[in-house]
Amino acid sequence: MADYFIHETAWVTDDGSFGVGKVLHFDDNALDEEQWEVLDCLSDHRKFAYVLAVLNGEDLDEWEN
Image (cartoon, rainbow, N blue to C red; front, top):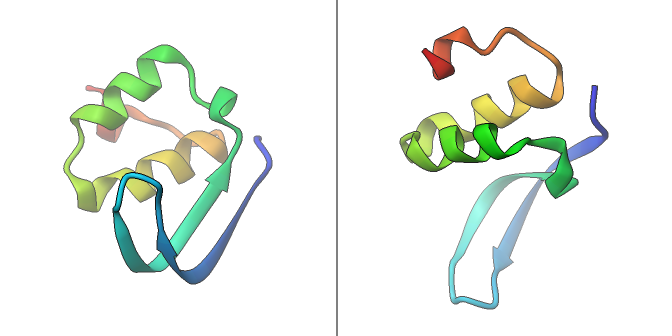
């Protein structure tokens, strides 16, 4: 299981993205190349749950098949 933390916050990124909500912070090495590719293909509303499942070592069949 990877280290991560979640908190409610407002944010602005250097590319101009901004928002308010839950933010999941984790090491970029916690996902392998294939998992980053899956994440890129998911709809926005499914990405948070997918990464959380990866970090918790859960079954990923829902997303990867």
